[in-house]
Amino acid sequence: MRNAFIEELVAAARDGKEVALVVGDLGYKVIEPFADSFPHRFFNAGVAEQNMMGLAAGMASEGVHVFVYSIANFPTFRCAEQVRNDVDYHNLPVTIVSVGGGLAYGNLGYSHHAVQDYALLRSMPNMVIAAPGDPMEVRGCFRYLIENPSPSYLRLGKAGEQNIHKSVPTITPGKWLPIQINSTAPDNRTILSTGATLELAIDWLKTSVYNGYSLHTLPMWGMNFKSLQPEMCSIWEQIVTAEDHLIDGGFGSWLLESLLLSNYDLNRVKIRSLDSKVCGMVGNQLALNRKGGLY
Image (cartoon, rainbow, N blue to C red; front, side, top):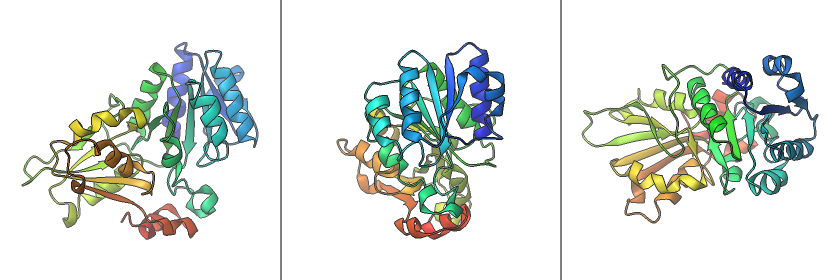
């Protein structure tokens, strides 16, 4: 996912887009294609995330679409005030690129567990959450964001993600993407995934528990796209949401909020998310996802 992002950023710069990349003294061995090609658009703010976000907001106020790149919680919780007051409040074109969503950096402990980031970012009115499930969705999300600059949060995996889509999908915030449709099932049931849990959801379909289910992904969502969900949900008798985040303030909770004022029976939505006990655990991503209930 990281490589797909950098390739798209380089392509956008070469295409004449006013973009810049700001990092917090990391990302090396990933960001060099952009930094080497466009050195005057690349800034290392050092280990100073609040300053980094303030710098990004200032550049964005002058018409530059700024991509702020860091690991997991660093460009979100460490500078939450700057994200809220400088970026989102002023509706500036800053894309926060978070690497290692969920438990991708689980070996480094709770400081690196990105399991509450949705809760923080989705509470901001102008923020678009982009949580791609594979490198192709990264490209699709990026292309939407570059054409529709706004406060946004691009949540990437750490490394090694497989392509699930055969080509780059056209992504619209709030619109589900079909991955696998089971038209022979006795009733309409689907898994709705966001982010890197797409690979997990594909594995779930191979089990007896989810035999006959379809699979969709929702790579882009946020506060402003709740109104689209009642129609998207209307044909499904059961929806199982999938996310590598705590249930509180997460993706499944967002979907339930979206349906509160509709006639949809909320009991038809089941949430699979991480148990909060993982907050006190250290281990690799697979082990922690198992402990957290995603396997």
